[in-house]
Image (tube, rainbow, N blue to C red; front, side, top):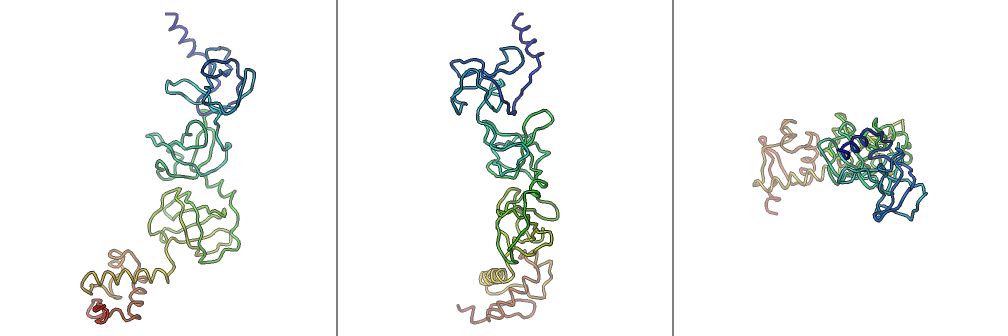
Length: 302
C-alpha cells in the first residue's frame, strides 16, 4: 500500500523536464552507473541518470552539465551529453533514421533521433534518405523537426551570379508541388524546375544535376532535368534506330503520327520525335513511305 502511495505521489509531482529536451543540470551525486542530475523537483527520487557511456567528458559533483533528455527502454527519463549539433531554428540536411505511423525520426547528432511529425513532412521520406529540415520546439516543449524550410532557405540563399544558360548545377529538392520542384544548390541558389522539365519525378531531399534554362531578375534560376535539345536528339535518334533494328527495320510511326500516340509510345514530344527522325534521315539511315518508317537498304545490311 505504501509503495502505491509513493507512486501516486510521484505521478502528481510536476516534472520540469521531459524527453526530447536540452537542459543544463547540476550533478548532485555519483553511483556505480554514472552520475545523477538534479531534476529540480525538490525530490531526489526524480534525479536523472547520466550513465557513464553517455558522458563525453569528465564530470564531478557540483558541475553544471548540458544534456539531451530522452526515455530509456523502461520509459525512465535519462540524460546524455550527446546533444544536437544544430541550434533551434537552424536548417540542415538530416538523415532519416526511422519511420513510424506518426511520422519519422531524423538524426541531429543527439543520443536519439528527433521527431518529424507527418504535418511537417514534404513527401514521404524513407529510412536512409537525407532531407532539408529545421529544428524547433513544439507546443509541449519538446524538440522536433519540420521539412517546411522555404522561408529559411530563402533567407540563406544568394542571387545567382556568373551563371549562364546551359550551365550544369547540383542541388537538392526541398519541395515538390503541382507546378514543379524547388531546389537549393551547393552555391546557395534557389532553383525552380517546371513539371514539364522533369521526366522522372525525384524524391524530396534527393540531389540531382540540372541544366540552367533561364536567369530570373530576382536572382533565382529556372532549370531542367532533361538533356539539351542537341543531346536529346542524338539519344532519341539512337533509341529509334535500335527500335527499328529490333522490329525488322520498320515501325508504323512517322513525322505525321499523332502527338498523343508519340507521347504514349516513346514518352517524348512530337517535336523531339521529329528532330530524331530528321537526324536519322539526314544521315541516310531511314526513309518514310505509306505511314511507315523503314531502315534504308544500306543500313539493313550493316
